[in-house]
Length: 295
Image 1 (cartoon, one colour):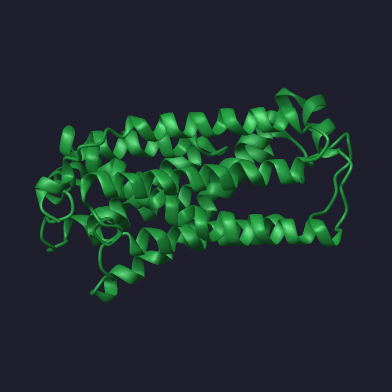
Image 2 (cartoon, rainbow, N blue to C red):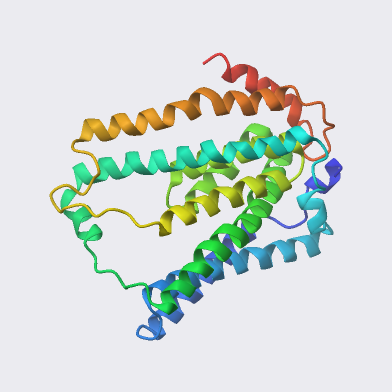
């Protein structure tokens, strides 16, 4: 895609207006029907409405700018090494879980009463309805529809728009911050978003970021439904003290910091692909990678 397509006639701020309006509509419906929708159905309905709103905005944006979804996503990657980047999802899952473990450890020791109360909430049981809800939420909405919509919005549109308006650094930073704010694990999602931005710039197609995102969410969805051992109210963690929990978390984080960033930056720095997706992005990214190596 040439540089002229990077300056759309529709401001991306309308995306947030659309999302805010959908949230208001959902709140009004929830208040009007408090006893009809269960908590699970309400949560899934909100997620579905959010994705539907984002998808509708993408289609509206494409129509107003004359850009097609095929141009946003790009063609399938032609180089085998690009598909090898999907191996990053293993370390990204590792990072996601380790950050959650770290935050949970700190929360337990700072707010033990609140965390214990949450852990001891009664289970709704594995009824047939709950199973269908879990399948739809974990394996259709979260693991398939969500990643495709999010990659089109955050990498396909926001990253390119802000890169054109300012530069690649601002584009990566802002799109990743907003991506993180849309998730509960803000820090882990922010880092995940930065990595996906780098992969997108390297491959110049959304196919690889979408594949990584789907594999990441699918793996987390599978882990979320696996049976877990219960912990006592006095010890809600599988380890005994704060320092042990922090140590385990840092041990899990360290391999990602030591290897994955260097791997991605090396791939971006040695890339010989043409600058068609993001104007001047590879040159700026090479400079960024050299600066990061100094730390």
